[in-house]
Length: 338
Image 1 (cartoon, rainbow, N blue to C red):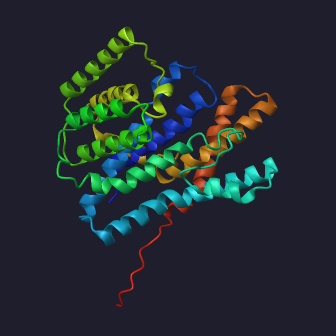
Image 2: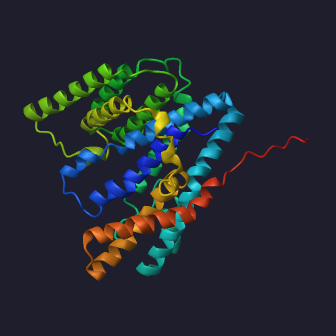
Image 3: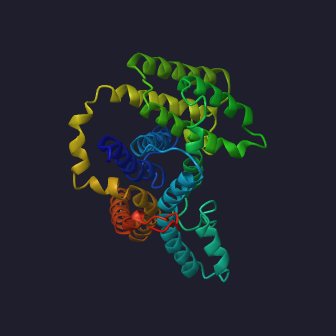
């Protein structure tokens, strides 16, 4: 059984990323650093992922063992990799044709490897959003183990402090490569905690939010830190962690006033439905959608807002068309005779 609220949140995030975030950053509709205030979407994506895993675990009574984990991993990886493979193939073809390079095998390898996802940044926006694939795969694979740990039910605020301390310790060290998976694993775990019953009252949300805001301003006053969150996001540092916490607490606070039963209709809106059904494909194909729109806009000397509309339209059309491949799954072969 699908959860309408989760679908609506997931679809809204895809809509927000395609329309607002990449309009603001890729087409520069909002200048930096003001656009960086909007960068709260990715922690929420992973919160939804962790929440969804908890629902899956509850509905299927999932118990981790070798066979069940292999089935889980194959199902989730195919859900991520097959749509990505199709997008990567299209991008590789574009690069091969327009770059006129002879190293075809290298190009194919670079694109088909989701941990590299292309190495040529000269093709507009084809690769800018694909950094997400790497941590998403890692979090997906490790989430069943993290949520099965003995101390899984520790208060998330306490775990958050520990994670913040770890992030501070490994910044600008040999282990800095771990920042991104640790950061997003925490938010996936936080989503899992919310799903299994951890409560965040309005008072708690407001207190944490105000404390984090005060901390950021205090640090910015006494120390030379950058509050442009785009500079703090790759990899996510302690500033981005506090910034993300502010937004998460604020949105939890706001959501406490929303009657979820009264927004169910959103899931059935025809214009919104594609962001639920084909959200991941829309996310992937926005790279090509924005590239095409930007090419048309620059060569046609179009107003930037018309280019933005073309980008959104082409992204949704491509995402919906290729979204059918999201249903393909790898399966564990069962040799047992029936």
